[in-house]
Length: 373
Image (cartoon, rainbow, N blue to C red; front, side, top):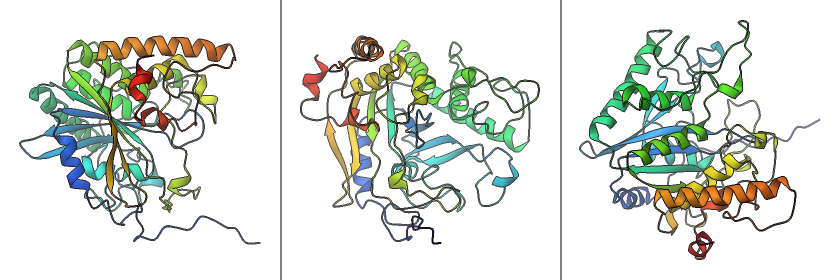
């Protein structure tokens, strides 16, 4: 009996670890940097079936140093013996150059960094970038310092800090990407009203109340509200998944090529988590999707013929207050109609189309007209 498994992509193939990168990466990055944003919240799509939570990371811009550095919680910094070999476990908060995080195929962090997670994200999944304008330099410095503090706590194997009760190590529900990013804003940058929840263990068993965990999209929405209250400007860039990567992570048990993995908008905790296919129907998911579309400015993709990056379409982002009001109206109307199980044309952009949901950001020529509905 012969088992046919997806072949491991050759290192020389585009979209694979160690393979070539888009030749015009620096030109496109320079074009995007012409906008004077201060930081960028990076929300990664989910790669599992159903309502996938995805990932969240933060890029801080430092024009004096000429760099943007992404701080991303390390999934493998959990002190699990299974991750002690072949995985990067030195830091809990990995600091990665932004273009490397999104587009590059070789890591400057370590050979053991995870392709598609710690670098080269767009070969595995789409990423939404919420760019924020007007953030004080002191806040950015405080955020970077707090990430360094978390790393120090992790290396010193500390427990029971102001931001987390228990050991300082990665935990998918208890100390995850959303909680570490939120903690840096709350305790580092002084966002005292930012709500951060804590998942609870029952009777010492590995049984977690997921309903109280921090979810990436929910944390993103909380931060967006905080920035709006501070009158910071915001817009959104969608970095689309390259859909031709045949790379298979050799350390994953299930051998699936990146191109065949789901690419799902990261869901809030809702009944949408039970949907393995089809459009999201929960109000909070619709609200997040519509709001991010309304704030959208650019959509960036790899052209599958030329293998070059291109800014596919652009539009004018709505002011936050208008974007939110429009998203709330459309999400409320559409979620109610979904509950009634009737055929209808959604008020929000394209919500009833393909389940990967990236169509929300295609920014086609008629996007402006749809936004006026």
